[in-house]
Amino acid sequence: MWAAVGLLAIFLSTILVTAATDAVHPPSHMETVDPGTLANNLEFANPGLTVRPDGSTIVTVVAQMFSFAPDPIEVSANRPVTFRLTSPDVMHGFEIVGTNANAMVIPGYVSQFTVTFKNPGEYIIGCNEYCGLMHHNMVGKLIVREEPK
Ligand code: CUA
Image (cartoon, rainbow, N blue to C red; front, side):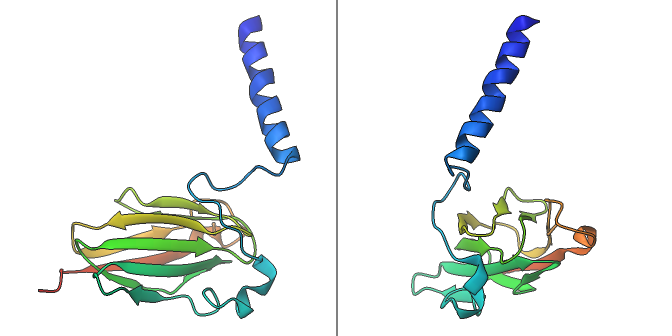
């Protein structure tokens, strides 16, 4: 039992130390952005899609109480899609239901990940971090189109 208590103490102190030293950030990506000036941010003022010459897509997403922008998001199947997400208000989640795309959206940081959707169709995007009274209404849609020939 004391070993378990010892582990708890270690885990708790790890959290406290990382919080105290400002080392809490999304695990995948370390890029900061000022959440107070997103409206003037070149990338995030107009969230949307950029298709690159190689067919891959960059999707810039702003998650805020209680919606995602853009919505819906429309991409092609079998092409790499890089999501870049941030929030101007509180922490949100960005989970594309039925896929392995799932990230935390943290004010002050850009969360980034790349996925390739194999199956065309419509997917629900859900916020899976409690963010306020209308959290349960914070849903978006992803449309995956057939790969262009
Ligand atoms: Cu946004 Cu819950």
